[in-house]
Image (tube, rainbow, N blue to C red; front, side):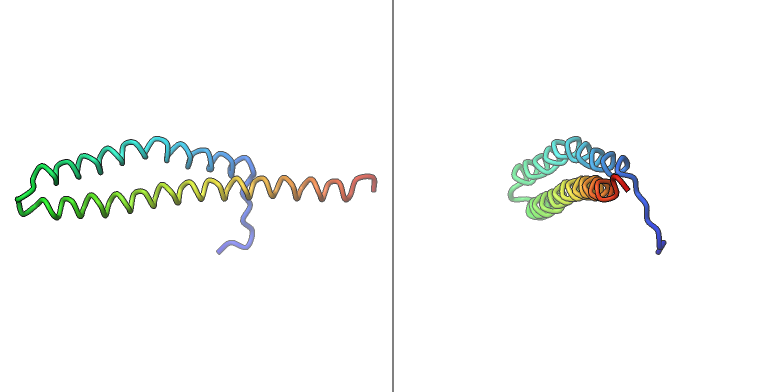
Length: 99
């Protein structure tokens, strides 16, 4: 692992925005896919495939929801890091003002 990891505040904020955009774009598409799979499973009641389709819909729905939640959390974390760095730099700057 590199000993010097330097990521600009600008890149942190851009990455957070990209993660937010990804969630915004993906959530409705993923919900539609899971809902349609659930509808298909319900329409096939009595068929051997119906229970597995329902399980697949439930499993993927939870898993994809978790992915979206984690992307939101990572976006928030990147913003917190960027804001913390701004605050730290301002404190250092003000500490050395007038030297």
